[in-house]
Image (cartoon, rainbow, N blue to C red):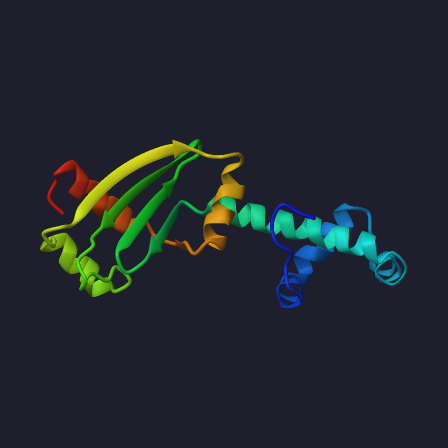
Length: 160
């Protein structure tokens, strides 16, 4: 079993050139690959898992910001090299909906009375790429960092 999830057949097909290059680096020719798929399915699966790990690892390395939004909580993460920083908003007000971009914008300029802003940081639990993958698998989405920097300014008391 690989570190990450296995690429789907459609994803593999979209990355066919890269997969062929990967096999070539492993010393596997096109005819070898056909034979391996037919006669050694476990080895073929292993090759696909290794390639999947390579692809996902490269993608995870490039991710710098993540977000997780629920109606009453908003977490924005900066994935630094050695630690992960979080900026967050929480509110128990019944009309709170951090899944709505317009509500977030209003909350920043006109904060609800019970709005809580917090910041934190922690070292990664293991490899950075593995933790980012787990976070994505748990509902986080990639982000551009604008929200994180805005919340950081708000937390520091700077004007937004």
